[in-house]
Image (cartoon, rainbow, N blue to C red):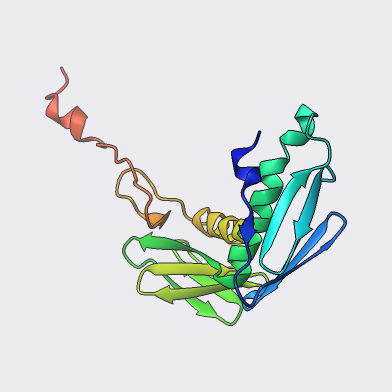
Length: 185
């Protein structure tokens, strides 16, 4: 039995959930999200809560979709009511970022600035060396943050590059260890 799948999803005020077979539409103050769920689950929605049930609880393959379907709906409800955000930090001399319309412009040590177009529903803010990516879809916010980080991932010697705020970069010693051993004969 899925412990997560059994839990009901409480709908906050201002959020509406409509169910049409396997398509669940969630509308709220931050936008609208649609989730296409597996056909093995059944959704019972009222104005205050959503309950996810299995059509055939005795099938092992069907039970694997129960918690997934519940969490997809729960993330969409949180996304349209509060939103999700990821913060990235830029480290390096002369490294900086700026927003220009729907583009994020990154100057991160290349011979040219990198223009990163932001899709609909995603916004980016830049304050000093911190980039904040916000949106209603948890998956889309995480994907865009990962793509921005991959423009210049942090390197292990000085830590220069773009990293997540809570990420710890394991540093390497470099050529210090060789010099401490003494001259070669």
